Image (tube, rainbow, N blue to C red; front, side):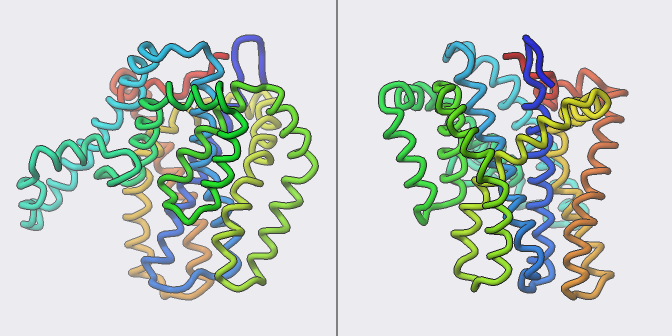
Length: 339
């Protein structure tokens, strides 16, 4: 649902991205059981990997679709990224410190140097993950925002070279932490700078992305494991357009749109809290349910859905009883995107 002042489809895509990220971390259940991946889960794991890519693509797009003002942008990101990042990491550090103290092993955090505190509160983009792993995307996004004048020069001066660089980097054997942020942030920036590219890609995507994504999802069930990484990289790209179309369709229905916009206001809270919740639930689940393919599959879907529900309930309660504090923790997210 769009009007002259905003594009609420972006809110819906953000919600989709957040939900997919929860399912990525639900996949850690496989590691907790220390078993191989049930083959029927592989297509769903590939679909979930699109969550971080969508987030980075939207961030790059929104940064460059507006008139670019570097100083004002950095001032805004202090409120929307830096303050929530530091506060949430501090909350989890203090929570873990308290729990460690109860167990008598708190000395590790208490003996941190200044550099360790800095790294764990803010993180180092594209390098060491911050204290709370699900927030790696915020540290990486911060690095890209600092580099945004350089990236804008690339999109303005050598757009075709930038596009070729995205394709090459995406298929190189480099870290996920480098590929996802750089490739999709820059891709979103190119879409913002060149609307005609967006329209051409849209016409192609309408014809091939969904059938191709489904085909790759089927192939992963039959091809040997070494093919998984390549199919995962291809499928991740292919799923983005169908997810966008789903988001657009949902926002055309007034009742559904209002619910999605409410869920969008809980996005950062969901990112911040779901990791701890799903880790706790997985600990209970694995200690009470014997390992089998069926228990891994049931746990993968069930624990993700339960974690999302619990986080949304907690976010709604905090939003209602402590709206100002919730606004600080969420960095003002959830407000409809003005274009």
